[in-house]
Figure 1: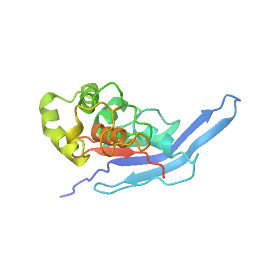
Figure 2 (figure 1 turned 45 degrees about the vertical axis):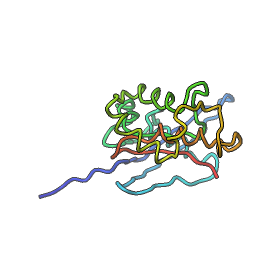
Figure 3 (figure 1 turned 120 degrees about the horizontal axis):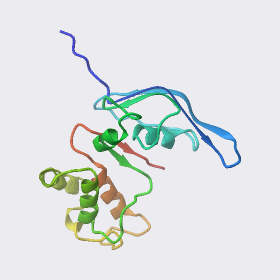
Amino acid sequence: MNTVVTLPLVGRDIRKTFRRATGEVVRALDGVSLEAHHGTLTALVGPDGAGKTTLIRLMSGLMAPDSGALQVLDLDVVVQPQAVQDRIGYMPQKFGLYEDLSVAENLDLYADLHGIDAAERARQYPRLLEMTALAPFTKRHNRQRHLGFLPQDHVCERQTTMARTLRPEGRVLWAIARP
């Protein structure tokens, strides 16, 4: 009996260009192919301008490649970008939280946007809040700091963003980190 194992990420000959205001065409990606396997950590490493962020945006269905094939969790990112976004977690380097909302309200907003119902939230939130050490701070607004939450470190924002980014089991997480 043959069992077909699909990979969570498969890209073949991906190309993406951008046009600068001057009219100059810049190749962000030029024939990139990659695979990621279940249960592994895969890192994109390279200098500024190498196309890492562009590739993550493509893998997230936020933009389409000029050519090539890209599938995430067996979904074509060009044909089904919303379905890809519903199944992944994407943690950008800029947090994008609403400062006037509490930690819990930010999590609820993100859950609402992704159609996560109350039963699933009740199941997931305790694990996410424990994992990110945010459980004692769910009523605290992100602009407020407490204990080790220092403004210059953006710790609370980082933890809240991570909590809202983590998705139910069996999903994929993209995180952008700079040293």
